[in-house]
Image (spheres, rainbow, N blue to C red):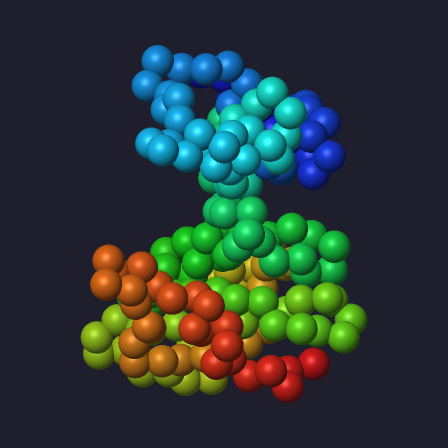
Length: 181
């Protein structure tokens, strides 16, 4: 099994970089088809980039050659020309000691293209405050970098979830403040 990163045109990327995670060689446990729908299997995993398996994940490779999953490519925000995975921002948010869970969505922004809107549930006993708002924004800035600083923090008691417990980002995106510029 050989991972690699390719750009959106399928060109291999070298060194430390971000891109689309692909597998260039088969592996022993790799699925060969979807039962009863081989065309869908080919279309889903092998049509985006020629002759490689693409799972739909984005990743970055560090200077040591280690790969870090940044999230689904369909869950990527474009902030001032920078591709940011919502999972990476959410991970930075929930690493804050006062945050229980977070969901990040993109909202339209007239200058940056997309702004980062974060729904945040605090740990039991924690209360939102202007100081915590600033602290959380600085926390993400330190963890990822200035470009990933959330534009809006929306404190909430809970996040909508599916039956399996996954956060419903589509619902969150539909209900966030659309007028932010």
